[in-house]
Image (cartoon, rainbow, N blue to C red; front, side, top):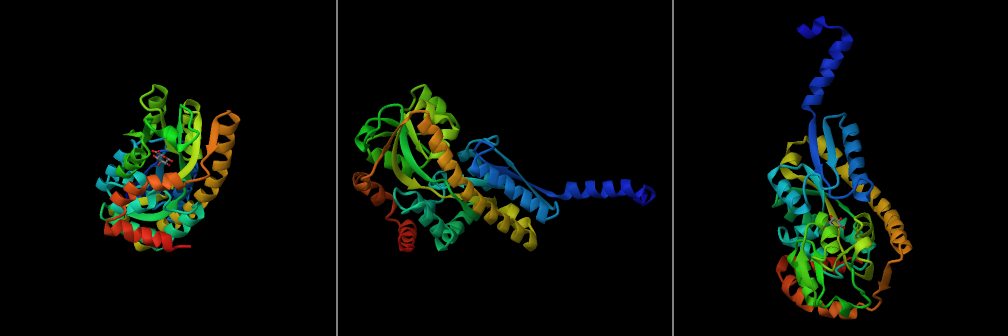
Length: 323
Ligand code: BDP
């Protein structure tokens, strides 16, 4: 009633404020710096959703691991502290074993192959497994191919023997480095730079954009391009948050995530080239591992340990069946 007595403009402001307060503000986690392809694409997702839901749903992404490191974020997503995130599948390996099939060395033939696989049935199957830990997979982002780098010469695989190598928190990655004769140390992403600089580890492994954007290339100047893994990243939303959205808003949110993934993949290709140039111009030593047969042979114990359970071996078969 009081509202009626106010002028139309003031009334409109009150109505707008009331709808703002009721808008669902979604908190998004991201580990990367704001100009990284993942970050730009997540911001685009936020814009599209806010626009298309006319402000009913307002996603906001917190970049640069402001909301914690990836392992903490994965926990928060399960228990509702976060609404959405882009996660690399390696830190999900222990929690959602189905993801291991996609992070085993040389599981994918190329980045295009990974896109075809993840956009098809395998993406759906992994998404189903993620629902068991309260996450809904909406789209798949790119993170290129990962290779080893160190502050000591890396001319061949043999040079990894005895080196302390940082890995993401995953039993598969620990086993991979150990099978190559290295000592694997799981360390959060945000601590890798200092760990290399202070000699806690000799090196790590990552793709061109992360090697460059984190400054790791300045403290570990030898990059061995073995391209051992092509790891997908998942755009995931907390299942409780998802279930609260109306059917129409779910459609909008899913479509925006898919469009953001298309943008991310395009930006990724551009950023890869740019990062490679920055690293090469800095004079780093880059060695291509052309013959991957020794690496593949060394992975036998890793495959024996992780690829023999029914879920992982079935997904691997499906990956291999995609041309
Ligand atoms: C980057 C991934 C990021 C991981 C990071 C890592 O995009 O999600 O946290 O590697 O190595 O390539 O931890």
